Length: 277
Ligand code: SAM
Image (cartoon, rainbow, N blue to C red; front, side, top):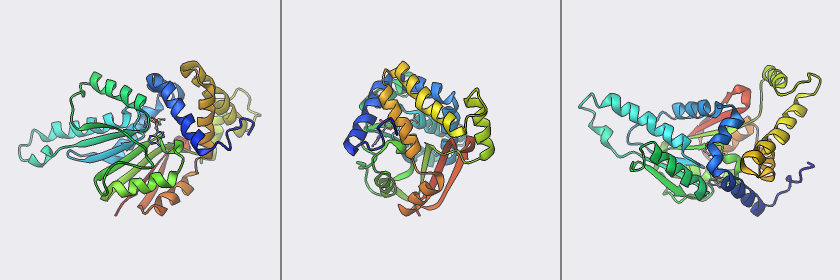
């Protein structure tokens, strides 16, 4: 492309991804709301409802950033506990819950810790912040009941390594769930999107999509984070991310079974899942 990011070397890729999340950490949550029109909140709710969290679970949220997914998991567990506490025979619910938030960027984790304190979770021992790389996790084999990665896998250098690590750390019976920006699959939706994204009906969808992704996202990135290049790179990363079926087959190749995906908003976002049996 004319943006010159097509052939970014691996070390440059890590550097760019590092830059964008360092520069944006303090404004990250605002950026998310701006760029998704608030929809990311509903998508994360859906991800966590598919996970079906339970008290005592050991969970790993990779690329967990500022804690959005982890907070939802804890909220889900708290409401189960509140209901169950009325029933004194539920002693098994006392087992220690552990929600690990793993991210490569310490600035994102720091914002997450601050948010946790604001939510009254500062002293909550079930929330554990870990600096680490999705491609080489520091967790033992077969230790997690669940693994989530939301808007994270698109940014990594080797998707296969991330999937292999997810498989390794999950227990047998553990669930892998990935929420990611994906590829629009529904023709009718493409038409609808087309009308929303542009004032002229005669411009093909791809041009309008490009207009949004290559102009609007980097512009918002520059405005909020003062960093247009990094955002242009991230847009490129969405385009290069494998389509739903291909990504599903990569998950199966990593060893997962019952691999499925669900498109949200016609495929703008997809949730892929798999079980380690
Ligand atoms: N999951 C959060 C959410 O949905 O709000 C954050 C998503 S944010 C778009 C992507 C996150 O991936 C950033 O916090 C970034 O630091 C992290 N990240 C990028 N590469 C990573 C890697 N190799 N290992 C772990 N985290 C990574």
